Image (cartoon, rainbow over all chains, first blue to last red; front, side, top):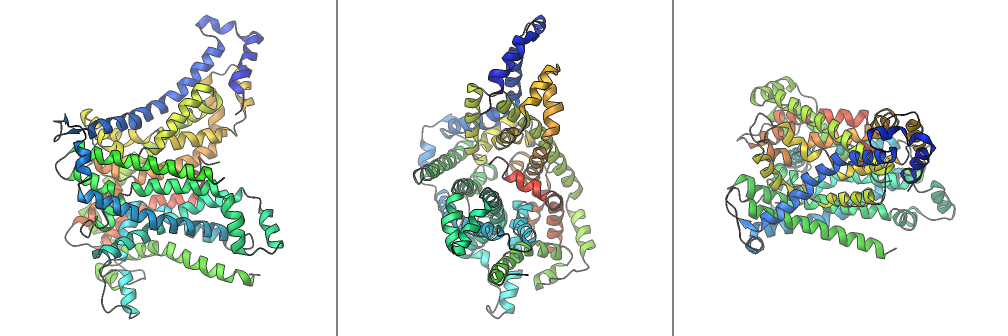
Length: 315
Length: 268
């Protein structure tokens, strides 16, 4: 860190400035200290009120039961109920399927694209980068709707497949548990690969390009360069994007609601979607909803923690 | 010119680019065609744009939702940038042991998922009578650990000598922030503004929870609601999606560099 406030203000004060501000009852140092804290207060207070406090509240609520405003304590009965709630368990399972399949595909593709686009011999780099990055410019709801229509029974994908003679008639992709999940995974990969690529490109720019040129002279092929230079040097970035992706996947909501509406028969429903439905769609059970949401928080925390540990030990 | 060994790379990148761009192309084509042509798979400009637009504004409060979305996104952006940059500046320039500790505590908030705070926040805002107001929309969004961290990291490039010189000139601490820090940090503000505006414009879950009365809906909610009907009119819905995407697309193309910096902003 840099030592501004510790040292220099004192010097200023010793040099004759000290006397003047005492009229107002505060030395310059004290004033500066007060200013420093004042600058932090609005943002810190908002995080305390809008994140930490509700988090604690959510835990307290998770121990209560009742409808609407009539709440009373019920111990851990909500937690017992949660592990018997078939739809909730289904939503946890779905989320982990997305996590296990979509996140690795997306991250590998993103690193690969970043590696290819980092090649200075490549023409049209800016154009390709813009194209791959473009999906980030849509809202999650917009792209969910676009994909829903693309994969509809009379949608574009079916038109192509029928036109090529692969299918006789349109297949209801969103009406089948497996294909609906695949569509969600495709959509997620489409939306987020460019986003992650941006992190890797930024990471690659910190690697001296001469390292790559040296590798080329030494006769290393692209594949070898990728595994022995790019991946090790990008490790901190990879861990970070992994944590972010886990965090995002555990909170999936917009896609589940707008692409498949959780269907067919809850085959694609996510945890957030189920929580929303049980609190805001049906009779509001804030206690039980909070129990499930607290569970999501615990999952996010555990997985982020494991990730950081794994990242540490491999060093 | 083009190196031969790079040809597979070009082919791969061309395919990926095509897949990335195609849904946008399809959206625009669908918005200009009628339902029948869209489901037949027509991929060229149609002549139904005006009709789709007329249907859209007659069935949906498009103007209201656009206005709401702009009000929400702009208010979040202005307030968030102000208080987070102030905090990032404070944490970096005035840092001491206790402030560093506070900072690490604030970072923990990154792990708190939105869905976990949504229910207590809904109850808080409901009790305060703030549901369906712009306050309910922006209060949970105006201070994020990500933004504070981004400003703190970027403040490292801010020359401390300026602060000391300004103090000797007798400028008050807050004036140093406004007159010295803000102008120097223009590019960080631009990146932060782009990313905050995008996030606020695209917000869906929280507004769906706290904006329930139909008059306070934003664009994202409007297009999501359009698929609820019995008959789904692709052309009209895609016209709505297009309107929802225009501001973010414009920002993307005009400020792509700032957008990329905003995404990766806190990582340096």
